[in-house]
Length: 101
Image 1 (cartoon, helix red, strand yellow):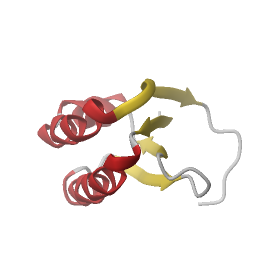
Image 2 (cartoon, rainbow, N blue to C red):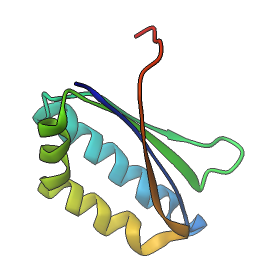
Image 3 (cartoon, one colour):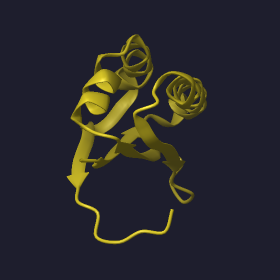
Image 4 (tube, rainbow, N blue to C red):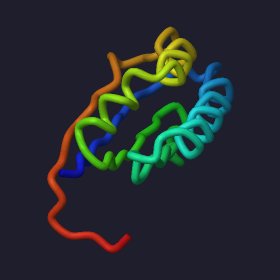
């Protein structure tokens, strides 16, 4: 059963470009190495570029767990976690109601 999830976070203003570069590198890794990740998209808020949201669709719990265990996740966390503001990343799970993909 697919897992639909978002992650919301905010970083320090002087870290935005560093975090964006890490996001791009991380998403490239996901594309190349995670066939069980159906969707991984990272968005940046236009009015406040310090805020990000990531959208995930994992094929199943095994794919979700494999993603979380990857060295790439640890490397990405090492970039953004020290510069978080407003609290930790907020992960939210969803159930799909309807979609056009």
